[in-house]
Length: 327
Image (cartoon, rainbow, N blue to C red):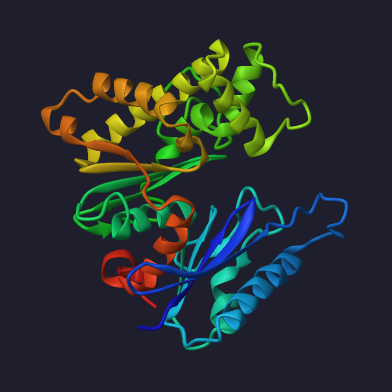
C-alpha cells in the first residue's frame, strides 16, 4: 500500500505529490518552473532546472516522513523519446534531450520510474479515477497553452509507434487556418490553444481592460471573462475554439469509436462558453449512429489529473505501461 511519487512537469509549474493506491493525492507541493529569461535566473541551465526539481521532490518526501515508495510516475511536456524519456519540452527551453528517466532512476534506485507525455497522463488519470472511469474507450484532452491528448481503447492506453498516439492537437480542423508551430496549417492547437485565441481576438479588435496582464494564462482568463460579459469578439473567440474542438472530437470518434471525451486544461474552465459551440459542432459533424452516443464532459480531476495519471503508470501498469515500455 506504499504511495507513488507523482510528478507533473510543465512550463508554468513543477508539481509533485504522494498518490495512494486508490488515487487519492495525500501530499502535494509545487514550485514555479524557473524562467531562464528572468532577471534573477542567473543563466539557468539544464542542471539548474534539475536541481530545482530534485529539491522539490526531496522536500515533499521528507516532509511526509520519508515513506517507502512504490515507484515514481511522471508526466512531462514533449516532445520526448519514449520510453527512454529523454525530454525536450517545447515550453522549457533549458531541457533539450535531457535524460530525465535516467536521472530519476539514479535518484531512486530499485524503484520503477515511468514517464509519459503530460497530456497522456491526464487521459490516464481521467480513465482510472475520473470522468472516464468505468468506460473502456476514452479520449482525454488538455486545452490550455497547447492542446494535447491521450487515448484509452479497450481499457488500455494506446501508445502508438513512438508513444504519441492520441495527439489530437495536430488533427487538422481548418486546412486554410493559421500556421501551427509543428509546421502545418490549421491544426486544432493552432486554432484553439489559449495564446492563439488571444492573438486572434486582438487581431479582431479586442483590447484588454488590464494592459499590464498581456500574456499567458492571465490574458486567456480575461478573454473568457469578457466573453461571459457578452463582449462580441471575446464571445466569437470562444465559439471559434469550441467549434474546432468539436470537429476534432467528431473525427476522433469516427476513427476510434469512443465512449467518453473528457476535456481539461485552463480553457475548459470557460464552461458553456466553450462546451455549447463544441457540442453543436460535434453533433453537426458526428453523423454516424455509433458516434452520436459519445459523452463529452469536463475532466473530473481538475489540476491533479496529471499527477493521478502519472501514479497510475505504476499502480495499474497492466493497463497503462505495457509492452516495450516495461521496466
